[in-house]
Amino acid sequence: MLAEGIFIYLAAAITILSVLVITRKNPVHSVITMLVLFFHIAALYVTLNAEFLAAVQVIVYAGAILVLFLFVILLLNLKEEAVARRYVGPWPLGLMAAVGLFLAIIVSLDSFVAGPKGAFTTEVIKAETNTKALGKILFTEYLYPFEVVSIVLLVAIIGAIVLAKKRLRS
Amino acid sequence: MIPLHWYLWLSAVVFMVGVAGFLMRRNIIIMFMSIELMLNAVNISLVSFSRYLDDMRGQILVFFIIAVAAAEAAIGLGIIIALFRNKVTAHVDEANEMKG
Image (cartoon, rainbow over all chains, first blue to last red; front, side, top):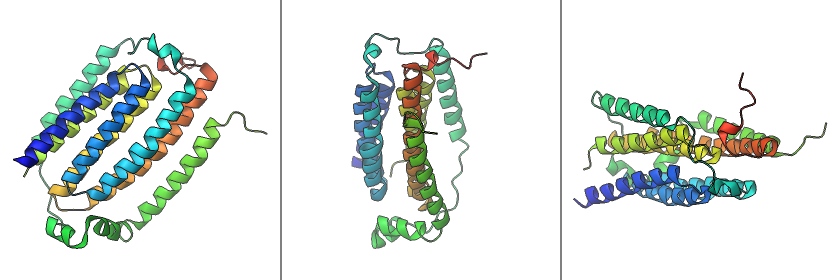
């Protein structure tokens, strides 16, 4: 009963906060709302026995990505944002597309068939802790994708510098 | 235990909000935040699958998605700064040079 109550609170908060994120006029308000939203999603991860991902969610999303967003908003000096239109001209079309996609997902949920269960039951994870179990798989079975991710991050660093630099000297 | 479908509904709702925000807003920064919302919706469903199928692979995938989201945010915000330098606007419907 308690678990259901916590889930319903988190789900309601996540839904309301995500709607607030896309409807606020001031981008700074959107970023602050999104910060609260990410904390709620981290709490949802804790209820799903994924403590490591909850920590990563707070550190990477709330700590790194949102600060980046905030920096860019302050850099751009969006004074005319307060008087400008919020939505594009054909916004009802976009809303209809989103609702249609939602209905398609909900209808297709009924035909969902769960696959075979894996080896990591709650008892196994409790015995060797979530982070250790995650690290064992990450550094053995998924070592190659892990290395590829490091290259992706390197490309992102170089790409961000190249894009944001004023003029490359030739 | 909470049924898996509750989590999938929540994920679908957040994804819908992300898609709607991406298609409706003019401000390119809010559009990028909508993309982050969609990624988070997928993460919620992956973590709940990981929990309900007793498998760690969903969480590994979420780990990779968060890394790619960080890379995407850095590149995307670089593009926003480049756009602002060339057009002095953050509104997508004012950047229309490539219209035929």
